Image (tube, rainbow, N blue to C red; front, side, top):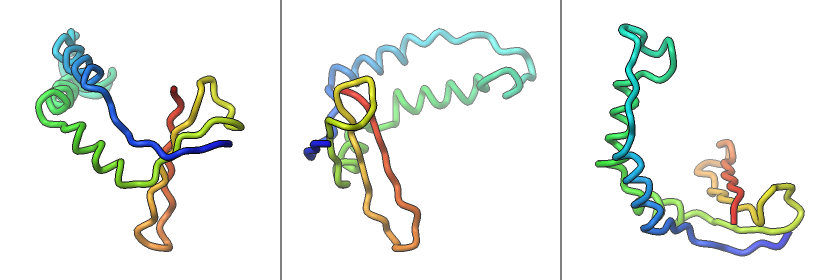
Length: 106
């Protein structure tokens, strides 16, 4: 598999699109007292969406993720798309479990 380093960067257009979609969320009714019994708890979901709209800072996360070695590869990986992206953080302790993040896409 051929591989090359890459920097993670999500375009401002994509981030704006996510914000617009979140703002257009159509909330369903919840069965009284159901909590998590019939799917996601509505109050929790509203808090989560509010966090993504008002608090989450994607650019900070990009900077954090870009500190780790990242590779984009093509070749022998059996995926439906053109390439695979790999993030392989260095282990903080020699006995810790290794982490590996894969993402298929162009």
